[in-house]
Length: 532
Image 1 (cartoon, helix red, strand yellow):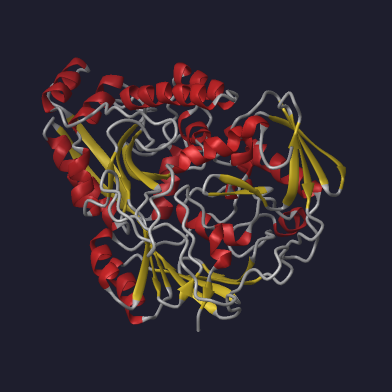
Image 2 (cartoon, rainbow, N blue to C red):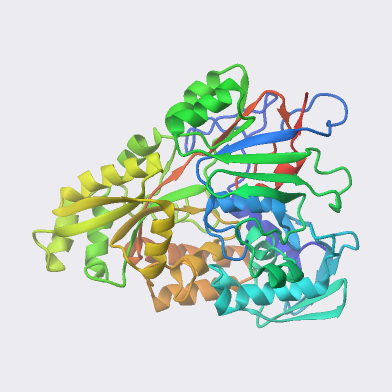
């Protein structure tokens, strides 16, 4: 049985996570007014003939990643870049698990053994062939506490990796895992070059231990990273581009001006206030509308008063999520009135827990918690993220209505990263990228010991549901377990979810091959080409 788990369970679940695809139309556009504005994610109709090879694609992103080690990264920009540099055993595209470094795989009837057959023509950028020893090393590196991989908890069910020969890697599981193939398709499970890690002592900065379609040519942290085509890439004819040149600019006006002037070819996620104007520019093409970043306020449950569930609930009830979305993101997106997952995603709650703000209820809860007059708090936000700063300002005004006097603490992204990891914050305005499978987010962010569980929230009932869901192969039963967990997260968790943004990409007319994926993944960039 090749390409799926027993009964096709993983493929079905991954498709559920994506929220489905928008309706087809001849010009590649559709609308979905119930959740997003103007969705366009279908494959672009290509001009006749073979895609052209050559040229360099200029891509602009708001911020560079602090961490480019695929096993340690947490920022979305790191995923965008690393999915060009690194590859995993398999990949996921629109919910379908496909071969990548592994050309085929099989699962034992008891669900406890996965056998992967590696390609004979997959090469690292160092020129060394990818072997099963690299697979073993990579998975063990993720699981090793010393690595501090944010998603290590999701891999804990892998008890051993056997390597009977250079092209065969056998994963042993402690129990069946419905998410395992989806998990192994993510950039966080990239297979890395052991010899490069050993020689260089790590994979951050400009160190390249990948086997993907592009390799690092140069990097100036915070400013630019240049990627060149990997000439030994296993897929014939791909990539079409000679390279990709990423630049970073936190100025929303400057980024919009750059794509309009033709200075860049691909503007990744323009600021929401520019979207309507950019969509009307006849020199440009746009794609997107399906959100992949959910915004929230993280409460530090390791310190008072946020360790008090009634204080957290008061904050949950005080927030008007639709107002936050309208002001912070120009209404592009979906208000999140329940748990982490938006209502169209697999395992999500479909009934709101917080349909609207309830100030009286919030004040009552604060009084019961011993804070009838409220308290003072600091809300940390990354200074260069304009829409998150706007979110924080709205939240500041809303929490003032129940007596919580919020001071907004604007910091650089590196400082925010340090403070959250060390627990030096009260509240943190932040965001979660939606993951291929719910387990990847739930295990990393909300289970004790999870690498992204800032504030160390712990709830035994919640954790038991997530662990049970991981090994539940019946997709409907698994969804029900996630819905129970989402209810707990919404009612007593460490985050006040606010909204799911609507993502858009804007490109020049001659940028071809865009094939968006709302899961999300950025591996389709290897199929981009320039019609010049």
